[in-house]
Length: 335
View 1: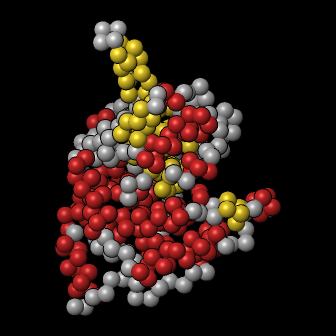
View 2: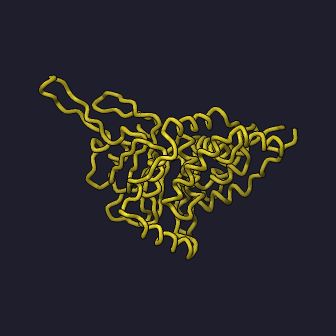
View 3: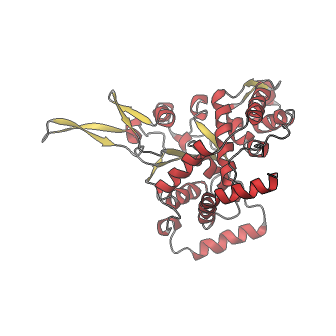
C-alpha cells in the first residue's frame, strides 16, 4: 500500500475523532480569537492526561481559555483564586465534627472536580502550592491521614503572571515538573485580530461569555478520546529514540545546569501522541515531537547562573539543542 493511500485510510478510520476534536477547537475559538495553535496545544495536553500552566501577561485571555475549554467538554469545573493567605484546606477540604452523627464529616474542597482552574497559582505560599503536588501526580489527596481519590479525568489548568514579583511565590522546580506543558497566549499578532476581539466583546451580553456556552461534547466522549490517544496511537522505535536524543541534547547543552528528568521525556512522548490523533493519524511523526519541545522541556530546564545573567533563556537553549539532533528518516509507520 502506498503511503498516500494509507494516510487517507487512516484519516477515514479516525474521521469521527478528528471531527470531534475539530469541533472542540472551533468551539473554543468562538471565544478566543487568533490563537488556534495555543488552543490545539492545550487540548493536546488534556488528551495526554497532563496538567497545563498558562504563563503570560495580564489580560491576554488565559482564564477565559481555561473556562471555555471546561464548558465545551461539559466538565465539572472549579476555580480557585490563589492569594497569599490561602490555606491547603481551602483547596483540599477539611473534616468537621457532626454532632448528629457523632462522626467527622469530610467537606470536600474545590480540588474534587474534573477541571481545576488554579488562577494566579504563584500567589499562593509554598505550603499551599505543595498541597497540589499529590493531586497532580497521583490524582488523590490525603486529608487527616486518609486518602481520597479524585474524579476522573482530573486536570489542573493553572495561570500565572510572570512580571509581578510583589506578593508572589515562584513555583518550586518539583511543582513545575508536574505540569506537562507550559504555554503562553501572546499578544494579538495583527490589527485585524485586535479589532476582532473588540467586535466579539461588544457582542457579549455579559462579562463572562462562558456561562451561555453549549458543550460540543460530553465528558465521557472526551475521556474516550483520551483513551484513544493512550491505546490507539503508536510510536515507532525511531521516534522514541529521537525523543530520547532531544532530551539528552538539552541536558548536555553547555548552558544547562539541570536538564529535564525522564518525566520530561515522557511528557514529550505523550503529547506527541495526542497531536498525532488531532492530525488524524495513529502514529507519531517527528514534526509532532518538534512542535512541543519548548512547551514540554523549557520549564524543566535550569540554566547556569552566569548564562542567565548574560540573557540566556531556557526556550532558546532548548531549541538550540533540538537543532543538533538529526531527524530520523522514514520514522513514520511502515506501509
